[in-house]
Image 1 (tube, rainbow, N blue to C red):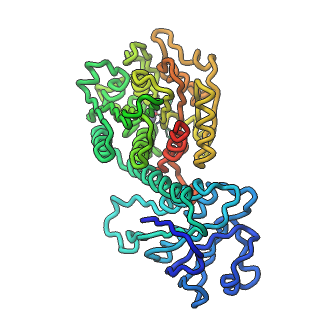
Image 2 (image 1 turned 135 degrees about the horizontal axis):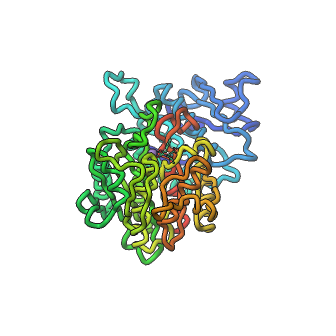
Amino acid sequence: MNIVVTHGDALNQETPLLVFGTWKGAALPEQLANLLEAGDWTGNTKQTLLLYTRGAIPARRVLLLGLGEQDDAHADRLRECAAVAAQRAREAKAERYTLAVPPLGSITARAAGQALAEGSLLALYRYQKYKTGLKDEDTREIEQLTIVTSEADQAFTTGVTTGEAVAHGVMLARDLANAPGNELTPTVMGETARQIGREFGMQVTVLGPSELREQGFGGILAVAQGSQQEPRFIIIEYGAEYANGPTICLVGKGITFDSGGISIKPAAGMEDMKMDMGGAAAVLGALQAVGELKLPLHVVGLISSAENMPSASAFKPGDIVKTLSGKTIEVVNTDAEGRVVLSDALHYAGRFKPAAVIDLATLTGAIMVALGPHATGMMSNDDDLSARLERAGQASGERVWRLPLWDPYKDMVKSDIADVKNSAGRPGGAITAAAFLSAFVDGYPWAHLDIAGTAWVDRQTKAYTPKGATGGAVRLLIETLQSWL
Ligand code: BES
Ligand code: MN
Ligand code: ZN
């Protein structure tokens, strides 16, 4: 769906469907109020009412859209309301529709434009690549959304353009995480990165098994050795011309299927483990959005990609692995594979002398127990970076919640016979995973985002977040990156 922004009186627009958002308690314009009986309309959040205008205004139909109380309004509510409107418009089989922007109050024009664009586009996302025999109405898309503001406003238009690029990145991440493991292998992950690099002018390097062996990526190789699928380590560099400013590294866990390996997972729900590359998907989605927005910032994406399988050649409990950093890992559980592949990537990130490294990983079931699907877990060695991410979480509607990373947790992952062990059991499982990672973080500000609960949801959480892959953390990352501009 294409979005255009115009300005003028929304009630004068000729359109098959006018979405008219109103705050709770606000008086409706007379032309619309005349179409209602008293008591039909409250303006509660996400309430909708479809009206036939019968010539009262040029629009053929009006969809009243409740925005809730204006006093405590925020951009994410607009995002959700725009999402509901887009879905109603599609149900109403509109080929195009118009959205009237309400008075914004304390929400900035820029944030509103971005939220409305994101909500509208993300709500229409469907993953139906593998459905055959679809009917026309299952695949028909809305061609155009026209957003009408009362006055011309450059900030609003900039917000819409930003929101479009971000939504494209989110949808790329969703497509990748929804893709089955037999389609999206580490090899395909590398090719996808190359493609994005070509399209948006990024330098992409993909290392395969022989290079990984030569250079000593022992963590990635250990996890991959039980699979027929070759591992990949992917380096995507955007904006090298801005390297005089800060360099930000985004590191993604790219396990294209996590069976658990020799410490095999139970059968129930194992199919969802095709999403164990949600961190890598977020990195690629964010980088694509950065490219589309042409952000003047040096951003480096690093992805460790492998498949975790049991076999005669698989790594096994008790094995000791020498990582790229030279540090050794005692493998006590092959299902704690994410931290093992990330150890190499975090060490590699040090090469770029980064101002910040943010890693994203569907790392632990424990974070789902702690936070559920409504917040990403964060552990960090740096208060400033944490605060940046918390602010970006508020602004983007993708909240993060920091957990402690005190020394006693680091003691929990010390090994008797190697430098660290890859599991300390269930207590504090999300934190001990981060404590393990911290052993490979060397002298740069770092934040670990455990997106196991937010990258994939079993049921819809927001009107713009369908069940399955959410594309989680792309919006958060773009908002965070913009804090360095
Ligand atoms: N990929 C999983 C974590 C996960 C679980 C992501 C559920 C999304 C949904 C990870 O590799 C894993 O298996 N972690 C183990 C660690 C344990 C063995 C220390 C876990 O959380 O159980
Ligand atoms: Mn695992
Ligand atoms: Zn995993």
